[in-house]
Amino acid sequence: MHAHPNRFHRRNVESITAEEIEVYRRSTMDLVVANISSDMAYDGGYVNRDGTEVERGEYKPAPGATYALSADRLARIQKTFDLGYAVHADKPIDVLEARANDQVAVMPALEGADALEGDIKNLHEMHKNGLRLIQLIHFRNNELGHTQTWPYSPGGLTEFGREVVQEANRLGIVIDMAHANEETVADILELSRHPVIFSHGGVREFTDHDRAVTDDQIRAIAEGGGIVGIWPHGSHISTVAEMVDYIEHVIKIGGVDHVGIGSDLRGVSKYVIGFDEQANFHAIAIELLNRGYSDEDVGKVMGGNFFRVWVTVSET
Ligand SMILES: [Zn+2]
Image 1 (cartoon, rainbow, N blue to C red):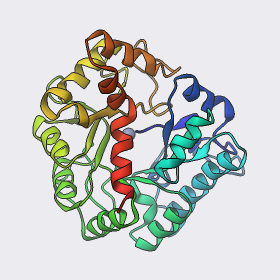
Image 2 (image 1 turned 30 degrees about the vertical axis):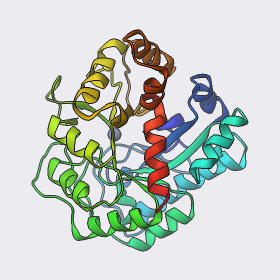
Image 3 (image 1 turned 90 degrees about the vertical axis):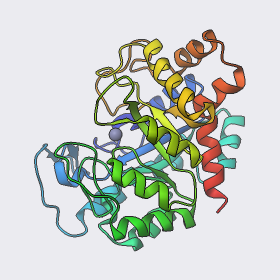
Image 4 (image 1 turned 120 degrees about the vertical axis):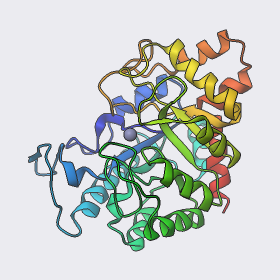
């Protein structure tokens, strides 16, 4: 439900590479959500097309620059399809067709809707250019709402945030609440007429990390038909078995239809042992099978639930 294949959005690569897509194909993943961190223009850490490196720092991007940077990265995802390395996950059926042809489907996504720069026309333009999932908030309080990351400030969805939720519902774009603070999550859940996901995080039961969800949030997300995605971040969880404890906690509170995996592949520097940089999704499935879950339930966790949400969202 959440990855940065190839770290393509920060590096100066023409497209996501064929080798990187192969990592997913080998792990029998049918669909990869490729995220552009659209707040990059505010904090650097990326390379421009002319090869100039933008160091980490604090920036005040000129009007239009944040959108332009993400639009450029979106074009690079499109290039991945033009080169035949992967198939655009435009509609759910495309994933099934790609799978039948032994190909991987890629869903273009924004991590943080900062790229919209507060203008709904930018959402329309990006949707036209292939965007199918939008995580509203990343590391800063943006035009839409408030982050869960320090320095904290109170507040939920803004007027523009509300407009984006309603428009995403209308267009059939999946909404992702990861990184949003509790008030913003509550506002999204109340407003969205479709299920919403929380793509990558932990659970408060086992960690007090600010990116973890409370049991009440798990219940609310599940009641709306959505999903909590568990994040195999090696600094928070050490082994695949421990990761599956997290998955089981969400199953206990919200049910097996409301959990998934947000690998964040290439987004963090360290993964749980046994999953690793090679994205060993099989290890998670095997651990679930060893704990007695049925093939059907394991399929739901490994991606079936997310696919169901997308089908629901796209049938607007
Ligand atoms: Zn993230």
